[in-house]
Image (cartoon, rainbow, N blue to C red; front, side):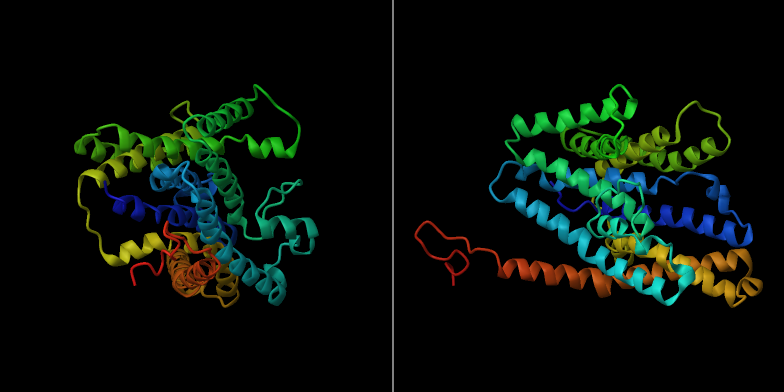
Length: 364
């Protein structure tokens, strides 16, 4: 069984690319009336939904054999913390510095103590105020999902699974309105986004337990990719009675199953640059909107749009978002991971072998 899924890894880059397209289109529309593929009229492009499902997929694929084993729950939660918070905090600080240097860059929420606390710790705000980094609203749900996913590490044969399934059932009741409590925490805890995470878990289970032919894998992959533009077109000019969220979710599940099935049956080789792009996806996702807002304003004040036009301006902004995102990955994200993991290793109690010797030095 392959541990590294090359196509799934590469598909991580879809998240920031789709989100960037939407934000870029909205920004260009606001400044110059240039609406890229009419994406500014969409609620989303589906990139965040893919982020949710992919998180569930990878969590199950990587940790499924560690459920119930001693110390694995702590390792899971610590690894998730390192994966999200250090880089997020650095980018948040950078945002606050820019807001201080450029008053037009500020949103006003920087002075609200409640927003400050909920932004730092990525917890839901009672007033539904987004974090300073607008894209970080999705991280609040991601962290919540990881906490619920951790239930599977507790007696996975029955109790953990029962609690996890129960969470899914209550989410269904809450999202469909069968049960409703007028409180912001209820709206957060039992939202429809939960099904996207769960769908990712289901997709991982399917490719691991159901024999999916390679030809079917390619078919699912193509249908999944086509599902995104079809979802966009249907949202703009409806021709199917299906919601944006449902259509995007079906496309995402098809894509995950297809890519996963291909990865498990075929050796895939991609250029290292594309592999690194997948690795840098989270950094690009966090950084891109700050870069977009900053450079769109500066370039507009400099009159660059009059020189390069709509397409030229859009390309420059995409290049800048990608450049600073990749730079943040190599210069911030990776060093922060090494620092935190090194610190945790130094503070981790040594494993003692049965004869009382330190397992780390037993074979030296």
